[in-house]
Length: 216
Image (tube, rainbow, N blue to C red; front, top):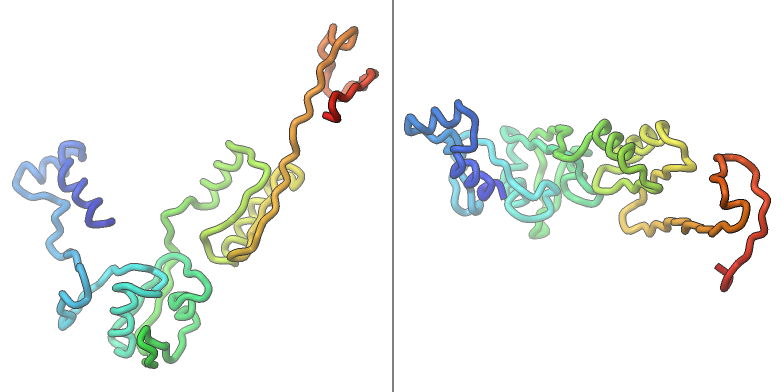
């Protein structure tokens, strides 16, 4: 995805700011990085020199990130930086407890000697943006998903303080936990006679005869 996105930046130079356009006019494309390269697979690179590799998936369950971790985790000169949250049950989440060893994809056990650092980073909306969105849409229910359990609960508690619980309900279900939501239907009454001559004020008592048609 990152490689395809970079092609857009490299192509539409005319839509960039003046500094980017001037650099391109002198024969230098700022989006063609000198020290950044795409790595198709772990079999096509040489790790004999210091480097930083940004690999996915972030949960370290499989793929290039898992291959490189199993290859490098036993060397204390290496380090792992994990941005964002990790789902319970994944290798990334397990590494937060700093285990002494892990089981590889092939079933072997290897030592974990590299440094492990967690950085809170997310491209999702933060508390302020989420609160503004709720204020603008006024939903009856808000379900927190796609995040760490404790972080979602903390967010739900903070948001719940700003809204009447009778108006907005905040839910933080577990993975695969069913959620039941109630949506009360609108009741419409047609008014005839003297009651319809003047619009009633909010909260004023009404005296009328209510007729139901077909139990509706």
